[in-house]
Image (cartoon, rainbow, N blue to C red; front, top):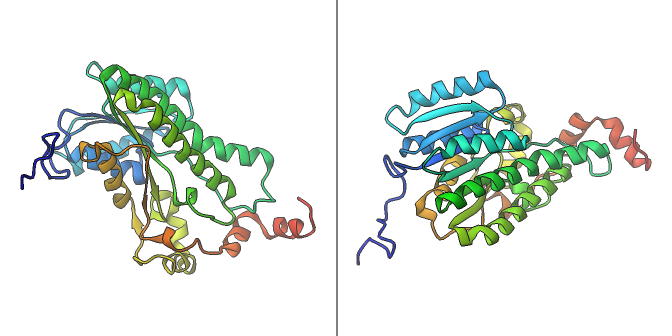
Length: 294
C-alpha cells in the first residue's frame, strides 16, 4: 500500500524542513511552553516571530533559540502584550508580512489558588480576562490575516483544568473552559476559510512559572499518584503537541482540545487544601467557615 495519502503527503511527521516556507507567530515565547514551541517550529524550518511583554527576557530567549536551531528557519522578535488588541493586531501584521500568516500560537494566562467562596470579586474577573482575552485577540487578528492568505492553523494553550474539577482553582478552571469553548465555536465559523483552530491542554508541566511548585515534592507526588505515566511533564512535551496541531500533519483536525498530561485526566485532581491555605491564607478559610469574607 502506498504511504502517500489523498492529499499527496507522505507519512513523515515533522523533521527538518517540514515547515519550510511557513510563517509562524508565537506570543508568550520568552520561556516555558512558548519557548519550547518556537524551538520546535524553527527546527522544522518555519520562519518564526516570537513575542512577549518583557524585552530583556525576550531577547535572551531569541539568543537561545538561535543557538538551539542554527539551521532552522528565520527568527525575529518583538515585544507584545497579548492583552492589548492594538499590539496583537500590529504583531500579526508583522508576522504575516507580504506572503501571509500560516501558524499562530498563543500561550496566555495564569491563576492562583483560592477557595471559590473567597475570591475578591475583581480578582476573579481579572483571572478570567487574563486567560480568555489573549485567546480571543489571537483568534480574531490571526484569523483575519489567514482569511486574506487562504488559511492557516491557530493553536492556543488551555489546561487540564478546563476538563475536570480542580479544587481551589475555580477562576482558572472557568477561564480555560471558556477558552476551549471559544476554540470550538471559532473553528466552526472559520473552517470555511481554510483555517483550523485547536487547543492543547497541558497537565502539570515544568516551566519557569511552575518551578516553585516542583520544589514542593509532597504536592508533586500527589499529582503523580493520579497519573498513569508517573513522570513530570516538560515544556517540550507540550511544544511537540502544539507543533503537531500547527502543521500539515493535522490537516483534518479542528475544534479539538488535545490533552497532554500523562493520563492525569483519566483519574482526578488531588485535594490541595493545604497548598491553597498557604497561598490564600488560613484566615480566609476561617472566615468562609463562619459564612464571612475577611
